Length: 291
Ligand code: SAM
Image (cartoon, helix red, strand yellow):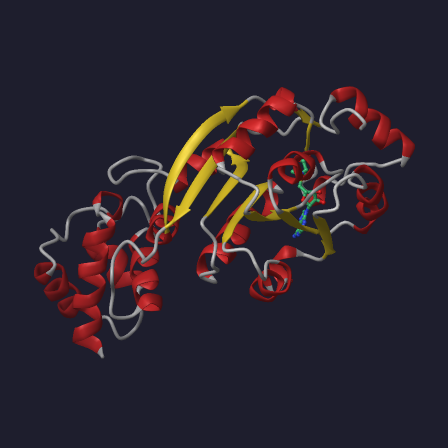
């Protein structure tokens, strides 16, 4: 079998052979370091019983390392120019299916049903296109798909925000949204030199382990999301001011003050100091007053 795709030499050979030009607008930064790829695969604990969904195979660098370990890989690629490349580079791997689609528009549940019929252990693994990191992660989380977890290469700064603890400057709406669905850990930081071309920002591998049940139970999930998003609208404002100005026309100051009191949250605190549990209690207290 050929040597791994993810070496600088083989990658350059493939790019030259197909006359491939990177499209910055599609977040195309390909990995050229097999050790990093193996670390990603290891962080996902993939076995021969695992089905893997990949986003953006590029020329197949990560896909190949996953295909060596997993039962099956289904990979979504938006860029049509990569299809003939992948046909050739992944020819040795009969357990890979490429779907030509924007992953944000894909019916993921259907793709899982169609491709992973006899598979119960499903992981999402990707070196994500950085221009759509958050929408892609939120789609996988919000659709409550039957997946065990998500291991992705993303911007280090976003990995820090997603895995942040209350009271830190990185903690915000994204931390709460992700941690509501999953346990979040930054697995490692990664230097730019393992990509071609090198991205302008630092990168990190993030692991999300999906919870059996969301971290907190709330009366109304969309309302809970509205409450914590409103609480972070202006980071310098107190939670009271943010909720008064950003939650909605129905939520007037007296109700908000009463709900904060019920939730035992000082109105002068800032959103970044509240735990997920506190947001859940606060959201329920507000919801009960207004519905
Ligand atoms: N997995 C490869 C690797 O690690 O070398 C390539 C990763 S590159 C950072 C991101 C890939 O995602 C590119 O192949 C790009 O064309 C693809 N992509 C960008 N936006 C996409 C989208 N919305 N849906 C599916 N694939 C997308």
